[in-house]
Image 1 (cartoon, rainbow, N blue to C red):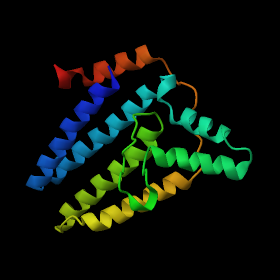
Image 2: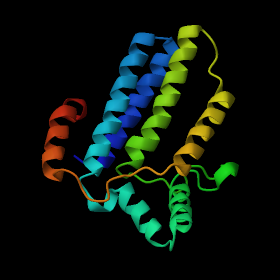
Image 3: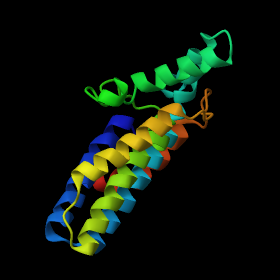
Image 4: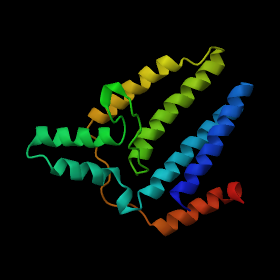
Length: 177
């Protein structure tokens, strides 16, 4: 099981969610939301087994460039901006440098997707139009907070790639074959 295969399946789930949205089918939307978020968790766990796919390593390497706490914080923030909001407040190239890395997938992308799915579901439940402008502002606030926070992410692999891949193949193979 590869991260890319799971990523492609995520697109299918997203499209299913969108189809349910068009029908205003709250039950199906809720089901697809749960499947999407579960898949992101599975992807993050698979990525965590690989030393080259760790957000914690990226941040630790960036912090090593600083000579004191202020500089270390600066390099951490800059490293996180490069892979997320890129240009900061302007957002001209949002997700331009995105990565499929453990920690980033589960702590950044998942939270953004969850915010989006929750807001879309709420708009259907309340019978209102999804407010894209308000959602963007909410997302920007989350992204800025995420870039500014100092959270510890694994910088060493966790788990066995082969074993995790086998478990994910058992879980997802009915959807692929």
